[in-house]
Image (cartoon, rainbow, N blue to C red):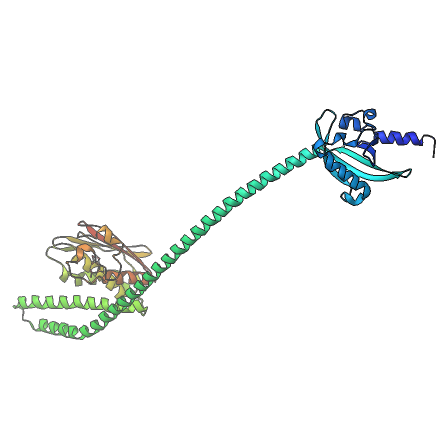
Length: 410
Ligand code: ADP
């Protein structure tokens, strides 16, 4: 050991940043280092020989002394790392948070305690702030959790309400579906019945027509009146036949059992035929003003079906317009043939217009006139079946215009 050994221990002792305090079994302070002075406010000389409890609050003296003695007798008495946090009292009476690290040692047959003392006020403050922040956070978490629980409850309620609404909606939908099925079934039965009945009417009607034709051939020139009646019979029978045709095409359209027969034909010739045949239906003073298309080429369509379509529209124009009024027909072509049939009749009330193509639908202002509500339904289905389209404009008591567009080449 070199000469300065003792001195170097002393210097190292004083240079230790923590306060170092040595005390004997009776808690008498044997030695302290310099760091104790700023820590506890006592000068080194002043504190040596004093009871170490001078820097422990009086209220804790008794318990502290008990611990100190117990520690001397059994060093395991303290926690494993022999450290503990205590509240200390400085010379000026102010309190200070301290950490004590204790260990026992023997010197010349006697036991001593060495305490390393650190000021942990700042650490404690930080811990306190941290604890407060934690509590605040926990408070917030509790608040948020409460809020969340409230929200979950609300959501559960909304969910239950929604489920109930969906259930009600489903029930209503089911009711509507059932009603629709019943309606469809009824409509099907109606169509079937009409078709059956029409088949039955056809034979006697063609008998009547043939007889009327035969009678008209036998009428002498001077008996014009009889001839007029026979013409009426023929017209009425033709009209009835048209209705029966409608009834029968209904079932075909409904079952999808309709096969179009396309041929090339002169459109103008067909129009002439339609107009000629309709003349017997005209009311007193009614006229047909026809503007044919210029240089109308042959078209490739189902002639019979095109005739059914235009007959229907023209007969309606005549039926739903008054005496002395014109029915205007015009035809134009580009890649389509566009036929306009306009009358100055009763028109279709706005509230009925959206339903007018529905089967059996008749507008409120047409109920007092004869009709079945089938024609337009068949017309639309056929126009679309031939690749065309149909629309109309109408004003009540002013008139109606139907516009049919058919492809020239199907
Ligand atoms: P209906 O046998 O009743 O004439 P339609 O299917 O041909 O049957 O027509 C359906 C309904 O459309 C008619 O009842 C009528 O209310 C209305 N309608 C059709 N064409 C005309 C028209 N040119 N003017 C006024 N109303 C029309």
